[in-house]
Image 1 (spheres, one colour):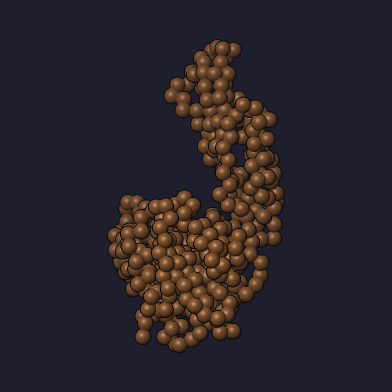
Image 2: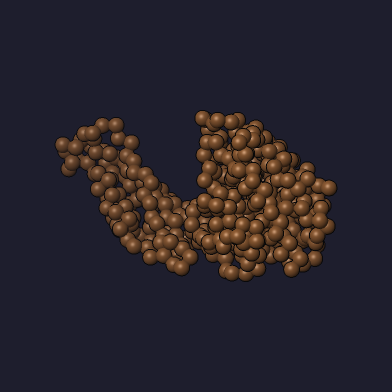
Length: 374
């Protein structure tokens, strides 16, 4: 019998200090757990990033599971060693317990439950990256390119991000907002505030441009998305003196946008509005992800049913929050995200109740049963 308890694997993964872009042995631990389950393991090194593709052959609808073994830095002030996998008062502590080594362990344990019960399983592919918390340029993107080139793309993919809000099973992510960031620089002429005619204050052009952007209504939201939001995140002139007109002013902003917009259109709108007020401004814009929404289908239906069977809850289908690697997967196949309660992710003393970890594994096992045996 293969160990079908997610706790030992979760602890082993947490004991690998895999802070982006370091792997610290985390994917070795995962590979060692998957081989006895019949998976073929492909290890990739894309740039500085460790990626892993695990494949299980079979007939029927091809399911994917995507996750990441990298974590954010631990920081200070932990009550327990962030890389020890400590259990205290029914809680598993460690950086990555929630985001998202716990979910990876829960999914592998679900696979073990199926193997032990000799249930039908496969075809199935795990897409595991070490670059989700970093730049996300050499991680899931490279795995997807590889699978697409081999025509080995899953028909649908589950991402184990911590989507639950207050109770395990209350929320499934079926989409994400897009994200666009802009860095704006307006140059002027430095001078004394008492002699403004000898200077050119760039703030007097930059600030009206920012206000025009801020006040423009983007939309009022849609059935599945909240209204798009523009946030000015920085205005800076680097001025150490109160009586000096600055020679340069810089600003940053970000828009989280819904599926009424596309990044290219917003990029053009930002540039045009800035140029209207500051014709000589330098504007650098990056679209890090487009808005997407997965339509109702087999994946969302099976996942909703599995959650209801185990927890009795009817999950809310949601598109809020930040971005994830699901934005890349959505270009290739239907994708949904479901995992642990995310209250402590990225915080000091990140932790998950052991009971919740095991319950998540039961949900994943129920999903697998419906997917492969229905």
